[in-house]
Length: 141
Image (cartoon, rainbow, N blue to C red; front, side, top):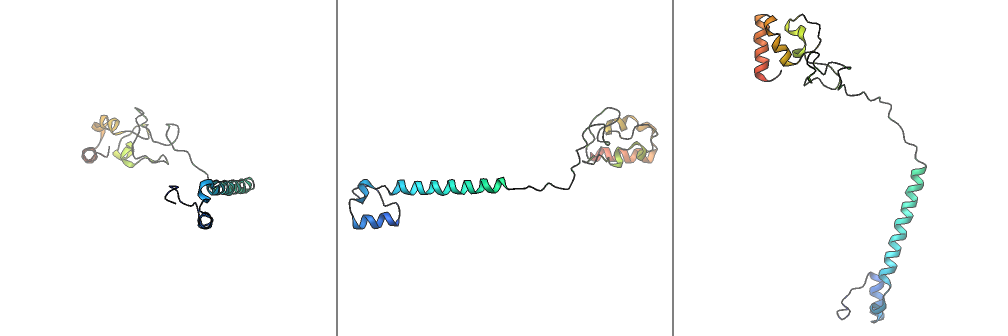
């Protein structure tokens, strides 16, 4: 084998080489092995294609809700400056800290961002104003 600088492809090729030392000079074992692998691959591919044709996929019964990213749905945007309110979640529900009624403000908007609430801070009661300043300092607004 050292003089041919190659090794037998598989056990059958090795058996043939042991019986006939000239087997490796015109060995067709590699070609036969490759053809066998190609046939195996194509037959399994055809089998999967047939299974795929007969496949009946089941759709999910769960309805998907859209993400409320526009001002038409929910309260994910400030109603005054139209800035996005962080922490509004995918259901369009704001936190209390973005609700003007939470701070004791009588305004028509349902949701305001921190900057718009800051401009209305003078209308808040002193205890609410202190709480607002604390929220602002903690970065929650």
